[in-house]
Image 1 (cartoon, rainbow, N blue to C red):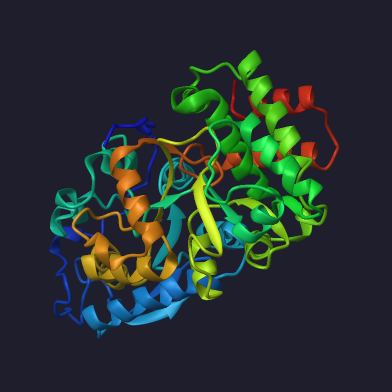
Image 2: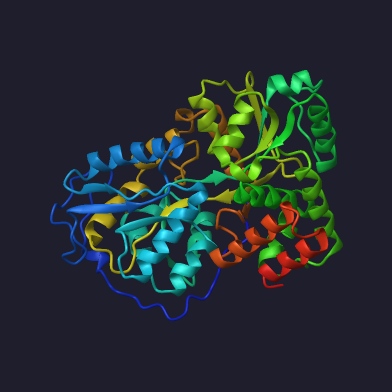
Amino acid sequence: MRTGRRITAVAAGIAAVSLALAACSSGGEGGTDDETGGTGGGDASEVEVFTWWASGSEKLGLDALVGVFEDQHPDTKFVNGAVAGGAGSAAKDLLQSRLQANDPPDTFQAHAGAELQDYIDAGQVEDVSSLYDEFGLRDVFPEDLVDRLTVDGKIYSIPSNIHRANVTWANTQVLTDAGLDPEATYATMDDWFTALDAVKDSGKTALSVATTWTQVQLLETVLLADLGAEGYSGLWDGSTDWASAEVTSALEDFEKLMTYTNTDRDGLDWPDATQQIIDGQAGFNVMGDWAVAAFDEAGKTAGTDYVYFPVPGTDGVFDFLADSFTLPVGAPHPGGAKNWLDTVGSLDGQVAFNKAKGSIPARTDADASEFSEYQQSAITSFGEDTIVSSLAHGAAVPVATLNSISDATSKFTTGASDLATFQSDLAAAAGA
């Protein structure tokens, strides 16, 4: 793997509450749980797991992970704290309210990377570095991934998976009807515009998209395509000038892409946009690889009913995000939380979860042949491609920055600002 940009930050003023993790026993890979559990006597009788995996392939993945957890830790009761809401927006709002009220769940889902910075700065999550040693995770997680999870020498979460954000999905029949070769890929945005024109002329929606966060994800892939991996990463570390002509050109491409999209986009979430591809209402869709589970659920076959490829201009780059789980400060059942983290990082847990969700294991010792055709391709790409951090999914920037970028994007795509204002708003959001 070629090493991508390492996320570093200074986590100042953390009010750490020690839970004596090293004293806690572990069930390991299907091992027997200490039913009194406890990190230094902590309660392992139950674990409230807070996620936004309330429906679709996400819920299927969670259910599969719970099945492994119940086998590995039968004396710890699983309590489902899932909150519905696209990309976790509703869940994150509720979670913040609970954390501020000193009423944390035992563990909560967060995107690995810069998204965790706000929780770290607020002293709301524990350092779980010792669990990496206890569970042997440093031996099975890629070194580059561990680097990306490390903040000021400490690790605050355990990833359950790896997702890729820069994937294009397309309906083969819609493309054929538009006179396009379904097996074609597109090296540049300009090449893709030609294909999008053909689909639009055929009477179909050329590019399906949904609510603001999906538009931000589309934006990040355009920035990645036009600026390249180094230039894109430079947007987040200050080495790329937001006011540059290159960024302006990328934003012009984004503006043009939005002209190909469905007019009802702001009232939809990602499954609706993906469903337009499944149903043959649209030609192309940009969505993370969790979408593959939707095609599987619909009984669609890759290569026959649909095709997938990196967003034009991003071949050879893996736009990375990962779901991960934390140990909140003041968790009421820290022993239960540790048992959950044990399962999340375990081989059996990661295989079961990712086979259902469509993502790939963070562990390198999983058997690739157990996974779908798409997942096998993603495993290969993650091992070979240049890795960059996703904007829309919390790997590249803290929550506050992402919220400001989302607000700027919504203003632009709803016609409330022009391109020059959009560029200026993005620069301000990124602190440029």
